[in-house]
Length: 118
Image (tube, rainbow, N blue to C red; front, side, top):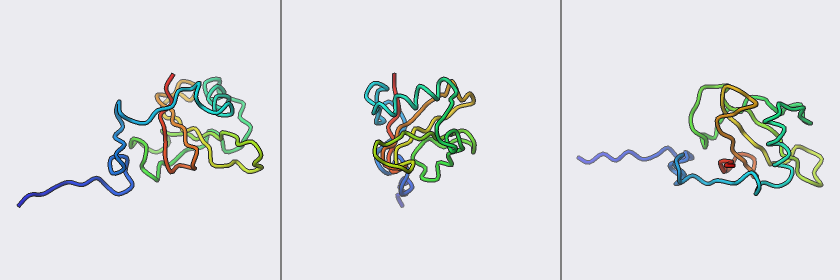
């Protein structure tokens, strides 16, 4: 009997997105200008314009690499013309908030992510 292990539905592997060198990326310079501003604020430690910026991101969608709770933090990327926080975010992970190990950008409220590269 042959047993085949299939990736979990909704996981990065199930969607063909292994978290390795083939993962989808976006350069800092290619982020929208609001995203570049948010990324710069993350590295500076703020101040952030939204009260929820810097709050724990739970990775419930399991699209980012699995890490312990509290590893990931989320930050708002403003969307021109929208009064709410909108759908754009940067999520960073690591022990030091101003020197994150990795950051990801989502323009669709956590439905997909692209790793931010220099």
